Structures are given as C-alpha cells and as structure tokens.
Amino acid sequence: MTIAPEKTDTQVQLRLGGEWLALCSLSLLTPGRGVAALLPDGRQVAVFLGRDGRSYAIDNRDPFSGAQVLSRGLVGSSAGRPFVASPLLKQRFDLASGDCLDDESVSVTSYEVRLGTDLAVDSGSAA
Image (cartoon, rainbow, N blue to C red; front, side, top):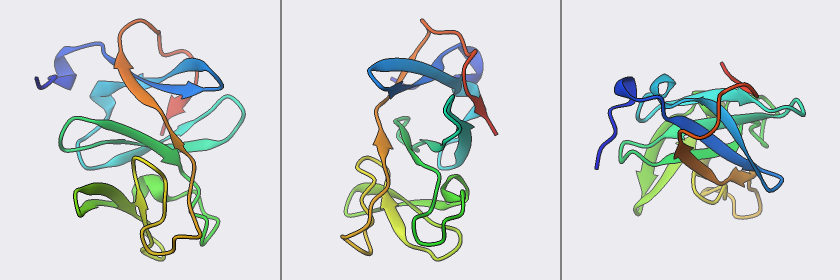
C-alpha cells in the first residue's frame, strides 16, 4: 500500500532512548532525498524516505569529514541495500544499519523509525 503523504497527517517518528519522538510530518519528505532533524539533546539525524516508501534515520554527521551533511547526500542502492553517499568525500552509508560500505571499520548510528499518527510534532525540527 502506498501512502499519499500530502493527503495524511502521518508523522515520522524516531525511537530515542526507549521512547518515540515525532520528528516531522511525512509530507515534508521527498522519496530519494534526505532532511536533517535536530534532536532535543542537540544532535542531528538525517531522515530519508526511500523510493519504496520505507523511512530511515542515521546520524547526520559524516565521520570522515566531521561535517553535518549526510542528509544532503546522494541516495542509491547496492546489492539491494539502500545507502546515502556523503556529498563531501562520497563514502556510502547503509541506511538500515549505518555501516560504511566503503570502510568496514566505520559506521554511523542508525535509528529505528516508524510512521504513525499518535504523536504530535512538538519535539525536534526538520531543516
């Protein structure tokens, strides 16, 4: 089933410390592109809506450059695994696991994401 984001008030929610945090409305996401969201503790996450309708969230900080840019990366897939390529140095990060596909010793945190309508968007913000 495909959800028409512009027709719903579905929220993208992220599991953070055992609780669900509403990040933004699903209608703010574009398939194949990312957005940055600010967490209550000041960290940033990169949130993606895959072309298959599945949502992902990983740290926005590129561990190779230190810049908060992964949300601006190019989205693709390799061997059926969705990834984002850093816009700076082009290393690819698996959107489901956070593992770097180009250097197995490096990874970023990945977060559990769900779509729902039971939480209002009053924490965090999409940029």
